[in-house]
Length: 281
Image (cartoon, rainbow, N blue to C red; front, side, top):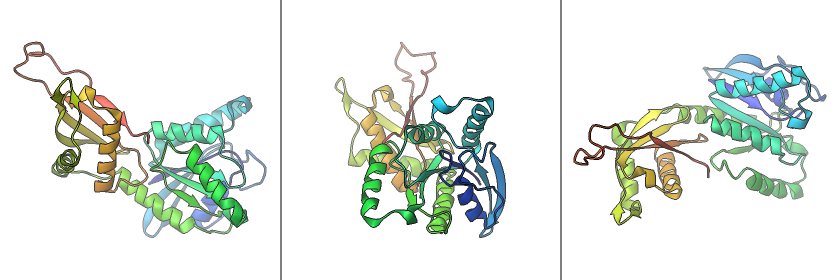
């Protein structure tokens, strides 16, 4: 299992990596930018093998000036591509910045399972914690499936729960979903809430099968699928997420319109490109 630990400089990424592996293998320093290269750290925990990727902090574009800094950012993006699960580390003492949302959006586009770790939580006064939670809900509302863990990497508070969530996210991202069970879930969803009418005809969704993993991809066959509204796609996403416990991972739904053999306009022609719908909310 490959885990990318990402975030801005000096939020405690290297300290978290050291806490996870139980020894100080990565230099942790209060000086921002201590880690310039992505560092691969293999370790075992509870009989399971992990590879942690400690990345350079992603700064605002205006501050990405020198060649080394640009290379560091590129390696962070490469780490996201290579990971199964991405942990975004935030500093509880700072507001959620544009670059936090930006790098999280990149991980979402890559289809990676996402977990948010709010570090240095032990230093936050009780009366401030609710305001921080509200800010997180507001700024990161485009990834509502991503669980938020409040931790102290230095003291270990909440880190055990973070590991369990990471394993669960990996298992969800790599889960196999049999065609029969996917189709049964689709049929149940349609029974509870039918697709809308399009020019007087009901959209028909016939069956579903798995089209990929990391992220889980569900391919749905039917007719008029190009007209399925986004709201209905989000509804189906939530159904599949609940049915198959797709924890902390984006879900991609891909529609394919079946060819009508009695339609002379389409006879002998291949159907058009599949239409994808990735969860946003």
